[in-house]
Length: 203
Image (tube, rainbow, N blue to C red; front, side, top):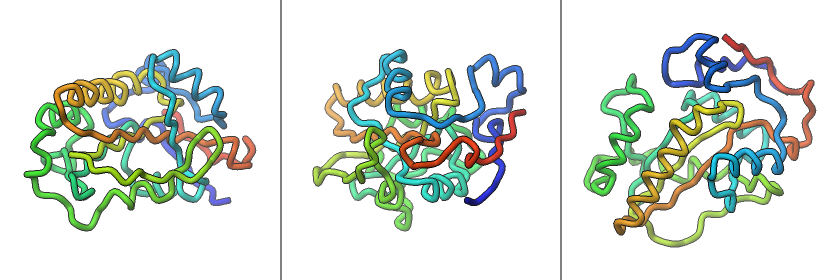
């Protein structure tokens, strides 16, 4: 298995110290089970009917290799093309909520014709049993893909779960949104053990 170091501090899109990470409940990643993930989401009062993750460690490593960040969001228009919420690459995920206030205009913004939704969903599975995920053939105004991890603790609540609340409000106002919450923890159902996990730099 490929050995590499993941920096937890680098996963968060804002500058913080080890003390701040501990305050936010950020922990060293552990092997997760469907039961533990379900209990975590229930405590946060988050719907558990569709828990998605990557299908194997290779897909997870590819995700980390893209330096997308945790937590993070990606928006796709009606044609499933990526529309960047950032004004510039250095912008942080604090801009997600601002973008969501005007996401009803996403189909009028310039997309990235190369990065399409299938690139982000082709290696997904259901966390409960690792069945391959298949996006239904239904038209939406936009697609919101959010990445979260149990080891990020309360950071999820401040970011991903707040974004989901904003998406729910937009749905009530008539916007057709498909939300995909993708968990990026390591999963026991992949058949790996604790000693096969990569090293994590907690700083």
